[in-house]
Image (tube, rainbow, N blue to C red; front, side, top):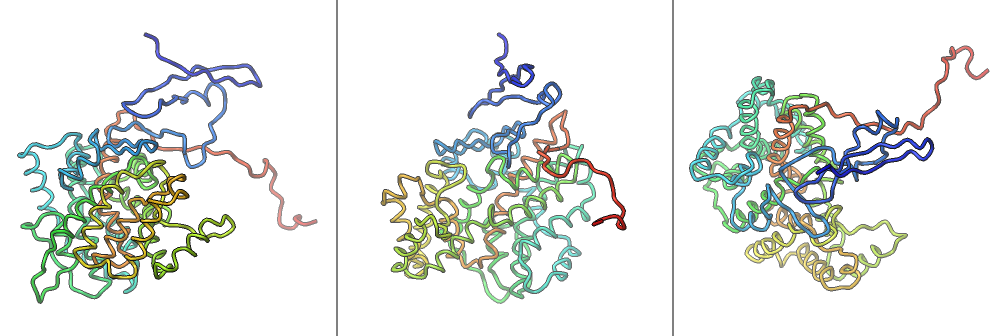
Length: 433
């Protein structure tokens, strides 16, 4: 059976080429147009790569129209209900759910590498007392390469595996130390007798003079948040990691590049923007005026945390995290705070009014995750840091997958040049004459 093709014809010359059609497990077919420039002398113009498949991947699949998110084929709803974050990490890295023995070995490897080199702890002292913790994350993760030179041997599968373990293990420690540095508290060393999420919360919130009291609802909320944010296909930060990795850069610098991209307010800062919006609204009585301004096309007012670039239906992650968020707010009695009163009223309006339903402006995962992190007592500048902790496994899984491609080539997007035509240099004495 011959492969299906698409014919692309240059109507100016009548010259045509046959482009093979590639079919994936799920999702739309893809036209393989790699010979377009060679045979027709043209490129496709696709700003922001909206309709370009930049790679083949077996990790994550999203159907934005149907509201589907799969990790290695498993629905996110099932993983959030039955799995934990480290099991999801194993799944994303290795493609299958682990056996008990495999899970035990994997957790043991993670727990053995949670500490940071003491010399790296001094790195924090170079930052200003009020530095954004994301700047620390970018710097410290990039500096890991100085302590693990074996990571430079990216052609060695065992070294790639160890780099993945180190990143997943150390990211909560790096993040918690950033927070402790900002508030002037001593760093809290990781404890191997605690689970991954419990250990992170202990490093974040415990103090030497008293025993830290764990809240199981808060731990569950944070666990689910990490699972929901573990990977999300070829988004901006993941594409950055892949593009950097295509140059054969070491994994720590690639992930540092992903962190820097995530820091952008258009990507990882959405949950922080939700809280700022709620603070701006102030009280539930101000909501009608705010929504009126939002509906006015001439008004720049934006409604943060509603709708999604990819999900044209309801964000499947939002369905999961909504119940967790409500449970946590009720247990912490946070619903009595004006901020959360505003959020609950906004949610009610978005889920009931025709204007929002017709436009599918449902609350997304950022709406609920922002409220959860606020309820946990995290400052706004730590919201994106927590996102980075969750997404680390996705970045390193995508990087590892790319490194295993036999004919991997360095990424090299093309452009539509609109600058000056070729011209000759004129000496400064002759310019303006």
